[in-house]
Length: 67
Image (tube, rainbow, N blue to C red):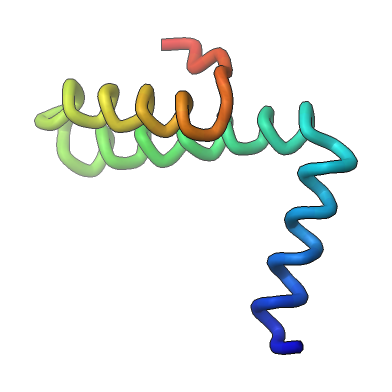
């Protein structure tokens, strides 16, 4: 088994054992990346970034984006 397979297995196990914590972490990561993009682009693409964040939130589980 390769290194990436081992990481994948550990990630899947973490999701199964701690779904609320994983969802909270993913929500925070999505929000921070969106904020970084907005900051770097001077909010030029804020509407697109918000749509992308919403789509990612739907795909990874509903979460509070605090927007």
